Image (cartoon, rainbow, N blue to C red; front, side, top):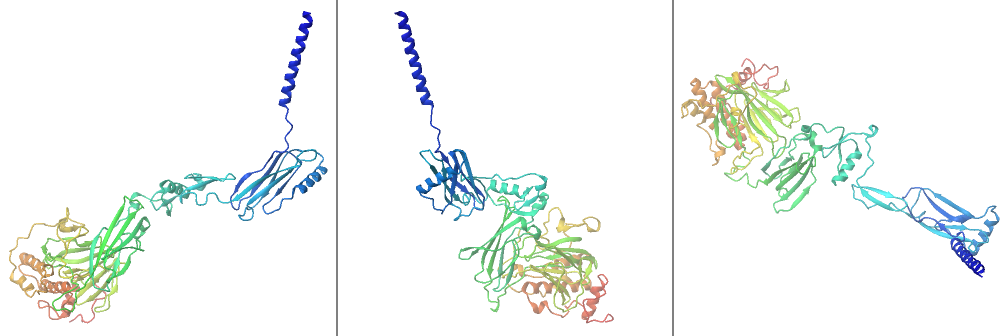
Length: 611
């Protein structure tokens, strides 16, 4: 009985194990899938690119792709097509993928729904399966990133990322050095583009090659805050203050005009000079802001206030357009722009006047070279530096341009001085007359000269020295160089800054020179002849009495100085000889040219050499 019981229990256990195996086997068995079909879902394509649409299944005998706009057959037709495909196949259904390719994706033609149909064959309860793919043709980066950023697109996912990562290489074949308008050096445009993106500002190429040394990236800009009063219709040359034209690519200039009513207008002007016609609509303040190398920490702001001269020049007793005038007399007397005067020991070369930041036109410097002539200091030549142009007038009415003498004819029309200064020269009324944008200069060809500042001003506009103006015509305070001396300083060029030991009161001879000094208008700066008296006193102190040439030069210089200040052309352009000069003008002319260098062509033709 026990044996049967054991066998019975063993049979039960075996039955249970068999049942577990059957259940386990039943759960592990799955009928092979045949209806799984995969295509692309949503597929982004960049316009113009080629693309492909996959049609994949794990159980199929054939695939068909229907493009957008093509009608998909109905159910019965697809079943019939499945039967047809089955009849033509030798092998049964299997995993397969079909890749349908397209070229030059065009929006409006190639975009839309693509339908993939898979035929499974006979003896399957699903003869065919379908799936769709939406093709979207667009540049997914368009309008997405900042102007300076690089957009990295991922196709066919249709995603993008904005960053400053550009495919820059330091391969020597791709190196193309350039200097940017921010004065930065780059190995190639790609590196400049990366920097531009990181900085958030557009950086442009200034030039190919290398930027150069620091001094080449530091353009010289004149600083000024000037006031100009002119008559209606006067044409002014406006400048931003940039000295060297070659440097303008390193500087950006923005002009604004503030009218008298306070209205602000942005002007379309840059670093080049431009012309302004003075009138009711153009009076106001002109402000130019210059940025060097686009660096906000390197900014220069210049201003010019333009006013309209409303005085009526025909009204009795009114004088308009008076000139601030400086006169250089024999003996070292200087009649200065502000109406004052000084007596200076002058030897070799001295700065007479300079304006490194005029309201318009080029910066200018005027140097005077002095020697001992007729026993006293005398102006032997005047050198002019206007912009990049240099020229000189010398004793004997000589005009020297780079070692060449200009041929002048007395009374002829003004001639342009070569070199681009914009100045002209003319020989008239026994003077060389230099006419430039910002000044006129007169030289008697012997020992005296004058500088008259333009434009003219009203009597109530005294001269005010600015930080950018200097020279003996302003004052004698020149720092370590006494009396504004430049160049050689030793030997014959030694300057004594002590006051000459002369009598305080003018001598009788010197008083005669200025006794007819005209009183033009009640304004201190318009008085004439002070410098002549000082120069004459020095001459008298040293030698007792002025020579005939000195007396003539002094008297003539007083007349011209007063006429320049008041623009009295009748007096200024007089051909009559002054009282202390030779009666015969030809005697004076030949005396003057004999004191200078020899000339093949004299500037006057109305005198015979024997006269």
